[in-house]
Amino acid sequence: MSDLPPTEVLVCVKCRRGQEMPDDARRPGEQLFDALNAADLPGGVTLTAVECLQNCDHGCTFALRGGPDRWTYVYGNVHEVSHPDVITDGIARYHATSDGVIPWRERPEHFKRNCVARIPPQTPAKEAAE
Image (cartoon, rainbow, N blue to C red):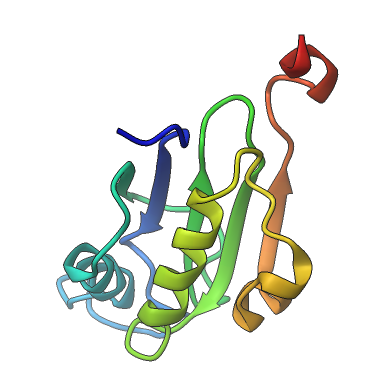
């Protein structure tokens, strides 16, 4: 059993990646979710489909969160075909941290350039230390 806190990956399955398409068409966000669901994710990582992350015109979007003591990150400009391997690598790196912060030099390049939001932990650092 791992001492790492669990990680949840939230993937917007309604994403159209800024494209016009029929309501019943298979959306890029669904394709991204399926690609990540088929990937070899680390133990302790769960994948959750969500309806919308409000980043609709900026590629597919996903978020990484890991509980009240870790930073949460939202990433955009994701392509459902060319980015699943990069995302899987970033998920593993995030999951390996205790605070959710991947050192800058160790972040996948896409993560460095396409962070939509960084949300602080619910538990302030000094309270977490006590």
